[in-house]
Amino acid sequence: MFRRRARRGLADSDLALVARVVPGWRHLNDDQRNIVIADADQLLRRFRWEAARNFELTDNMRVQIAAQAALPILGLDPGAYAKVGTVVVRPTTVRRTRVSDGPVPGVVEESSMYLAGEADEGDGPLVLAWDSVVSDTNHPARGHNVVIHEFAHKIDLLDNGFDGTPAILDPGQRLRWIAVCTEVYERLRRGEQPTGLRDYAATNPAEFFAVATETFFTVPVELAGSEPDLYAVLCDFYGQDPASRVVS
Image 1 (tube, one colour):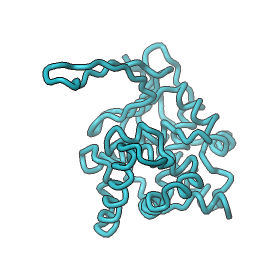
Image 2: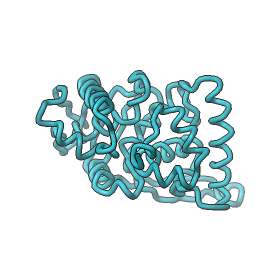
Image 3: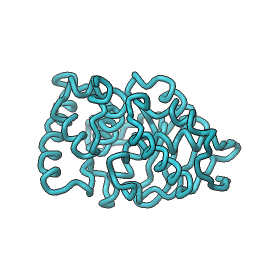
């Protein structure tokens, strides 16, 4: 079903592409840019890259994905992606039918959803739809980034569970993280007030973390204004303050 391409690192000619696709690149200083470039190079070399059947995965595509994935780990150890082994790229989003319990016992409901990406549990593959990657890259102000979203899921999986509380939080961070994220998550589920996060964040704690992460890196000023406590715990966890980079 999949075919594999040989791995290689970044070439000098790739640097302009990195600068174009990484959210907030123009606000990074030289040291931060060098770290993102070095991490992207390592991700290109370390991951296994596969293309869905009848789809051509080019070096340009791989560079765009690796460069965007490098941004969240700018302030983390690259080991945060220990659960990423294979990155599979398919041409488009796919439609999936989900069966869930209905409002009456014994009755089930079917609903359709379109998947732009998937992060398999454990050490399974991370899957991305290329059309969504391109759309998100071209429209960063929408606050969506499927690459950052799916890689956030893999950070979440470091403790072998999708629970929205990364294992690499230290004890002090963890208590504050749980308190803040739970409050915002429950408020989002009740629809009580705008949170700066899209509705999909209310699906479960894992999706809350992934949506919060992509929002943090793509529209940080908006998130800091709407949910300052959530923004603060994300700053503490990721070791970055992207909103201050924008306004400084």
